[in-house]
Image 1: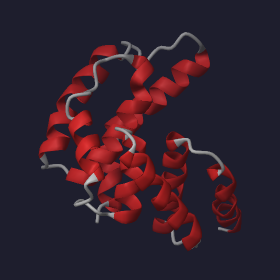
Image 2: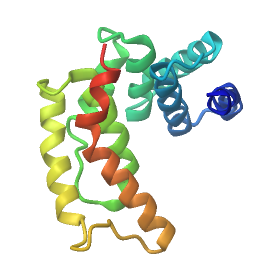
Image 3: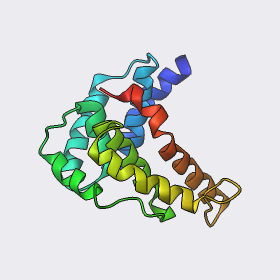
Length: 171
């Protein structure tokens, strides 16, 4: 448990710039840490929540929506309108260079809407269709390099696992 706690404590260093995707990964790790009974410093959560809200108000970033929903859990924020409207038309399309967008969109919309919500249902069908159409017969989602194939396959698997992983994060 101690090495995991030390890792959680060190995540503040990863929040030095305004990269929402990095904030998304940090918030995912901190959410998992909380669920695992590790101590998460309130200042780290507050910083992520503030930055997520700021990033949410400046554009349609699914990682910012994830941060907002995980830490603020405010479904009534006016800043959500633009992001939700954009994600509802910027659907997964089978472009493997957008797997990160698919992952964060999946995490955020499932967190926002749950399995029965309109935004999730609107996102989920194109997501499944695009992932299944781009998966190789052998199982992976190919990239130009081995590393890219590993990242593509990992992100695609995480997208498909949202159903199984997110219920514990829900409000």
